[in-house]
Amino acid sequence: MISHRSHLRVHTAWIAFMDIGCLLAGLIVAVSVVIGAQEFAGYVREHLDGWLAFFGSILLANYFVGSYGIQTTYSRFNLIVSWMFSVGFALLVLSIMSYAGLRVPLGRGVLFFAVMTYSAASLFLKLLIYRSLFRSSVFLCRVVVLGVSEHARQLRSMVESTYVLPAHKVLAYIRMHAEEDEMRPSEVGIMDGVAVIDASGETIEDVVASLGVELIIISHDEQHDAVLFYRQLRRLRFSGVEVLEQRHAAEIYNSKIPLEMINETTMMEISQASALPLVGRFKRLFDIVVSVLTGLVCLPLIVLIYVLIKAGAIQSPVFYTQQRVGRFGDLFRMYKFRTMNVGAEDETGAIWAVEDDDRVTYLGRLLRRCRMDEIPQLFNILRGDMSFVGPRPERPEFIEELEKRIPYYNERANVLPGLTGWAQVRYSYGNTHDDAARKLEYDLYYIKYLSIGLDVQIILRTIRIVLFGKDGLG
Image (tube, rainbow, N blue to C red):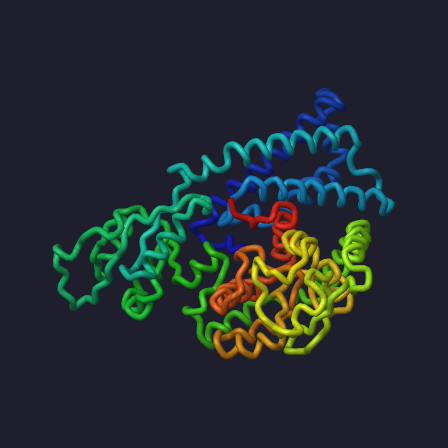
């Protein structure tokens, strides 16, 4: 999501230029085949508004789904889904223009060949060339880490992940010394196969320049000592070398905000950075439109599930309601298809759900695996109890305990809970307090970077989970 950092701009620009090139190829092929080379220039000029609408909607849709930023969860499936969304969005825009009383922007034959050529070129580049291109030395992002602690090791593992594109390479760990400290050559060594280099305020700029570094990341443990280097780090940043603290690096490369790296000041920054006050009304309109359309599309499936549940136990209820905690701690009744045996909690009371829960029916396991038991929550969305995307609502019995054990857990209550969420598509199934803490890190990221574009990404990733039962990685 974060693409404005200087070390990512070249990568971002190349992806956008690749798309523009594919769109231009679509224009050339479509007009040449359908209209002819002789009338090429005249047709393009006459239908310039249509081409601009087509190009603009494709680029806007790809921007919405995060195609023009650093890829931290690269997968061919995600690329195909992004392509389908961008083409569908473009066709929708052109259809609206046509039915709104405007003249037809582009002929159907021209549009068909333009879409087919763009799709073939774009998918070829992204599926066959994209990964090898951005893992090559041409686009390699050269990194040094300030620090030699365990956090520094974690940083290397994070940025060198095979899912991160363009590829990153940690060239050295830098052990910082104050000006008055005496640096001994014997202290220079190797850690996990990477050089450890001693540097002071006087030498750090020379070290960075000699290695051709594009990115410096300050290990969380070294932030206090790094203050002594701030003057040099500022100068390096203004010379074109990006400088990040570990928390910001985690936001870019892991799409989460680590709990161990935040405090009240950080939480205030997150709340001030959140766009919810600005996009709240648009998000509500988005929720209503998407939930209504999803309900209409899923209507046959809803009827089928209703019949199957009734067939299994005619006298038993089809729907199951449960009290959940909503925005600002307000309680509401959440609806689900019943997946457990009737009276499953009469003896046990409220307990964490487990993956192989023997209280769950055979049909219930299938519904849970594909998340189809959540479909009735579309009604909660229409009522305004929930949003389509947001932190998952928890039961009040669990909330009190989680808030005691996990710092800042109550921050989730500042936004509407969701049918699906960033934590759900980025973190595997979990039923422990540690799992809840890890999911909170993703929820805090969502709160900070909340946008319609991020919501679209989460919905598309949720579709993958529903269809294939796996997250967006790989």
